[in-house]
Length: 292
Image (cartoon, rainbow, N blue to C red; front, side, top):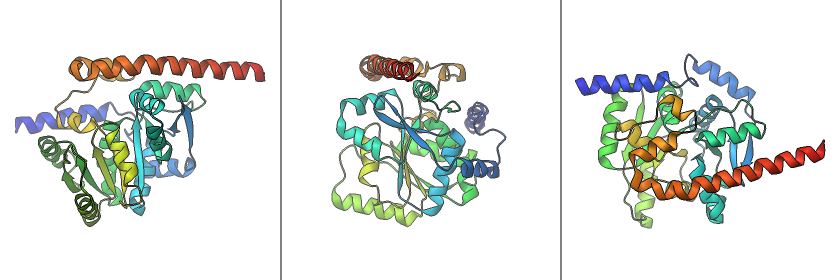
């Protein structure tokens, strides 16, 4: 009982930090979506990132889910964009995506510099929480795919407590090896049979993004790559404090929790992203200067 109460309190803390969805009715989100139904993608170091506020991206996902259309959403940070810069085949995945949300604050800052002045952060854990809160209002069920069985079990227990009206269409881990064709076809059939409108995929970057692209048109639902959001919600990893996240220092907080796994990634990608971003900003400034 004590653990359940603590879990509920922790989730309340998460929601209190989400200024994007506080005190907003579903009707307000719907009105904003109609105003901003046409959105644009801006290139950040040669990859497209969707310039659309958090609330509108959530509502767009819910409209797709209600219509049972096949769409996929990439939740991007600096690591993902550098991977796309290095690997043209992965860059194609981001270009094919229906939404590429700005998860990391450096991407938000870049979008603002490129003209999207009202852009805010669209992070994986916030997407998960918002969809679990709002999906029941649209009678949309959610399928949780990937991660590991213990993590999914913790998530199910917490979801049932925090979102009692949420329809969990299914929860299923996947093996590290690629699925055989019969296994993949059986998985697609299970997802269809579940009636899910949204499939949250946690396989890690870039595996989950490749998986979503390969299943575009095969799964009649919105697939969203949420990677590290599952263990955060399950309580296996801690999320950085609000001030650190919005100051752009969440990477440091994550590195302190997993130095062995993240040292190489951050050491390779952060300097590259910084240099490429500065180069892009400088070129934009020079073009504007010549135009004036």
